[in-house]
Image (cartoon, rainbow, N blue to C red; front, side, top):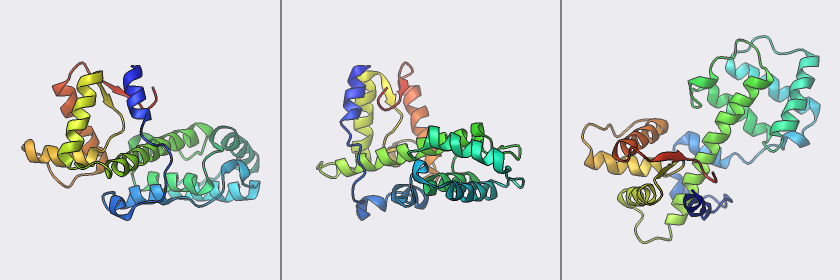
Length: 219
């Protein structure tokens, strides 16, 4: 699968200055993910700052019994060790998105306990969502230099990758491809959540290319 990895790795990794024209094609939540550059890295935060962050996270998801000081220190140590590169604002945003249902059902049940496992589940779901949005942004930004960057063009490039490498990329400009499918496939609703668009496109491709497998970036 080296070919698809090399192809996807040509996508720029760094998120530069956001282009307002590109950002208009993202939802409010997606824009907030891209523009959340505030806060301090977890490993740079003081214990007090992380305790405040944990209290806020508990409030967001309805944990009405925040951990005691001993458990808080265990959580703080765990965060620094395994999620230190995220900022405190990003972790707080992750729990905000859990509260709004933006990160899926898998992270909704916390059993009124904020444990290391639950923290990691939320952060993992957030990171996957963030990376997906960043890669879509970079694809759109890169496509800005290509003469044809219509929904049909995004669809054709996706089909080309799928046919050539027998894989379906995990990250793509799903909203654009979905917009094109709405033109050629009957019964699709135009105004649906981003995750539903992605799922619909992937289902469509799996039916068209049953042997193609989902391929994560860099795998």
